[in-house]
Length: 172
Image (cartoon, rainbow, N blue to C red; front, top):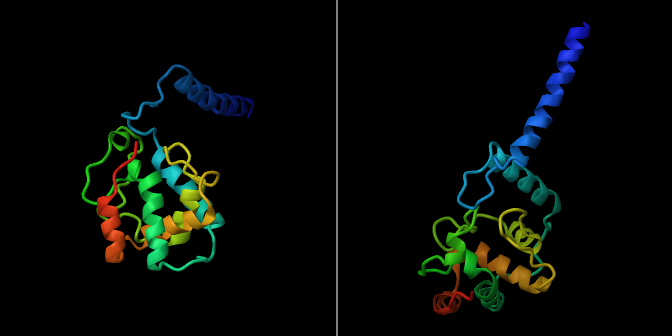
């Protein structure tokens, strides 16, 4: 029985020591061009999903009317487009060099399938180790909701919001 316990203790010590040396010797991928670590993507998505479900607002305090959507276009153009792109424009050099790659929100699926409360949480808090900043300290709550409503309704914007998006320029 003593050999079993000794083997168990040694086995339990080897794993943390091996993990430490993996990081301490520069083996872990840290460059934006490197592949993710084993289980990194799965664990990050699981943790993000659980946190959002736990903390996102339960209701939306404003309607996706034309005024709010136009306000959302301005917030998006000023703060989001450099990473997430604009309709009909090429991605920026900033977006191209990021890891994980930021989704181009007006190409393909985007976030129109996400409820605005989820997008609000992401915009307000940011997403750790992705380059997605939290705007809680720099944008007011109405602006956070406006951009969240814009993205939730990106596939059904009024012509005025579409025109304003098309004429926007990516700001470095």
